[in-house]
Amino acid sequence: MALFVVVSVFYMVTLVGNLTIILLSHLDPQLHTPMYFFLTQLSILDLCFTTSCIPQMLVNLWGPDKTISYLGCAMQLYIFLGLGAAECVLLVVMSFDRYVAVCRPLHYAVIVHPKLCDRLAFLVWVSGICDCLVQGHSTMKLPFCSHHRVDDFVCEVPALIRLACGDTHVNELQISMNVGIFLLGPLLLILISYGQITRAVLAIQSQEGRSKAFRTCSSHLLVVLLFYCSATAVYVRPRSYFSQKAGKFLTLFYTVVTPTLNPLIYTLRNKDVKGAFMRQFEKSRTASME
Image 1 (cartoon, rainbow, N blue to C red):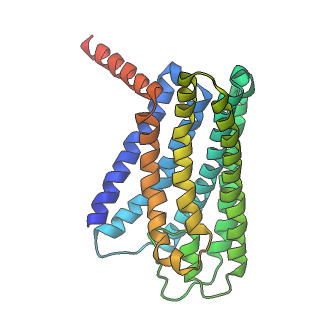
Image 2 (cartoon, rainbow, N blue to C red; image 1 turned 45 degrees about the vertical axis):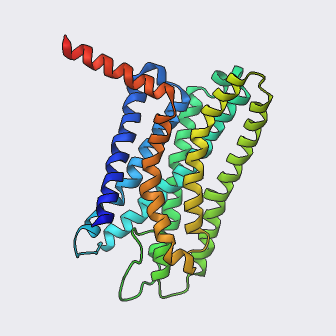
Image 3 (cartoon, rainbow, N blue to C red; image 1 turned 30 degrees about the vertical axis):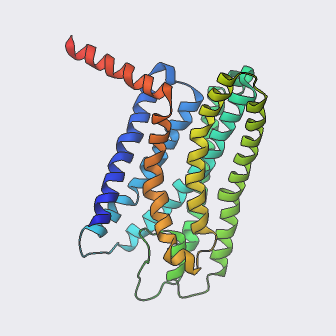
């Protein structure tokens, strides 16, 4: 019951925080920029990501019934894989946006134009769909043991591989490839881009300019560390003792805690979002008084 209350609170904060970012980015003209376009995409992913698993998790935590149907487990797995892979790619896209903003500020509007933003968003969602179709299909084809007990909070690949009775070497190899493609590869690209950003920031003469550049990138870098560290720890060794015992709590972290922290990190540390919120609040108050 204690965990039910904690997860419920986190889920409500996730819903409110991400919906606020989506609405503000849509309503406020000053937030109609590539940065907030990608931030809106992240909020949509986080909303779908958490909604695909947390309601079922709350049902299981509430009462004695800890079951999930086969179809429900399969749907949760496919959605979980697709949105997780899409978020990995999106974080790389956001790091590219920050790289251009800091390292090529005079060419930012030319490089990161609206058509490129739409194409990058399309790439993000297509990457997620491809991953869920490939890895989800191979995982659900595994021969599962008769007791059908998923030792985890959600139906994700490591938990279902531990449940399988047959040979899982192909699936584990597939996980290793996915870790390279969607976790370690993107993380390396992000670190390279931030290495270039750090060099550009250190070259700025004014303290105010360095502080502004740091604020621009620090929120995204913190989100990257929260997501990638927990997700990589779960998927690197899916059959290990660590994954079985501690991995499911790391799963709980990046499915519940990280999507909650994302909007808080971007809103509490961002003057543009706070300014947009105040403008919309004043507009609503003026309209109600009239």
